[in-house]
Length: 207
Image (tube, rainbow, N blue to C red; front, side):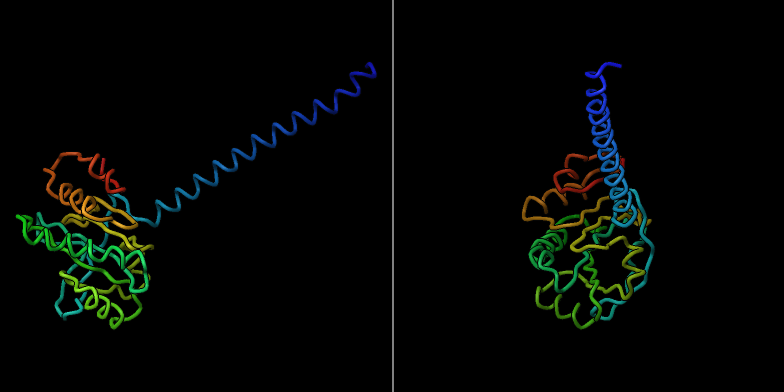
């Protein structure tokens, strides 16, 4: 082996080793990203998943069932927490959704505010302060919050009478454009795939 080759071999080995480190780091990053995506899919709501049926009292004392209803009925569930700034920003938009639904032929749509607060008092005060035009309930345990796949607020879901999630979005709905898109999604005929509308809302619909 020549002296020159002897000097070059360590450099070649170093280059190969550095390349392997880069490849392994990239693969590790991809694995971490995939693991994070799978964790998100496991806890956050997605179209096509199901939520349970849960009988609960509204702040007004009425008894309602979340996640199920008469055949053909749909529910819009608006998850919030009284200390959430994003929820506060979205509160007028949620009222707009409820009021516009009340003025349309969507008689098979029910809107519920769902508080994840630790007390009824906080949820009730929040509903009064924002003059919510829809019934408000509170999920009393982290177990039910988890079963309804609402680990973050604000979260909005559109579900059918079987408890199947038709649309879900975690984060602010936005202003007028968001409301128009949501109503267009609700009005879509059964069997249609208004993917563009769902995309404009930043959510998803079943494939």
